[in-house]
Image: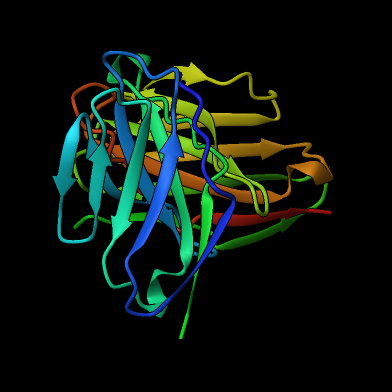
Length: 111
Length: 115
């Protein structure tokens, strides 16, 4: 399973766009990139998943360059309720559903 | 219903006690998971059940004993735990352990304190 590296923490203000970059230099050909969000004392929640280029849903966008060695989670116009830990995961389903969480990025949104 | 429920919410137990954590989902998922999360750390996978059979055991000590009585229920039996086992125990489920989605649904967790 590819190792991921993310910033430990980030600060932002309400209404700003936040971009969290994850490095995964050893990503394998059949690996997907997945992001989870976790609020204090709650279980993680799936945000978005992608393989290449750009993926967008109602919550976030995921940008993956052609070499796939990094990815960027983009949260548009954050609010105080987006304060959470964001985890980047890389892996493939032939690993039996095994999710290995990296250290995560603690995002703090200020008013 | 996209909810995974876990009981109890909090549990305090002594090192000689036997207790069980329970997890339930009614999404028709055939894969269920136990994770352990220490404060300020990421969740760590403990066990994976696929179609009610244990498919992954991440070298977890035998004082943790998982059980999957049916496709909706997952238990974690605890016996002779140590204080360092105090953590948030998370249950999750997914449609299967294969496919093209890494979406797992997590419950709120059981906060376990071992005294």
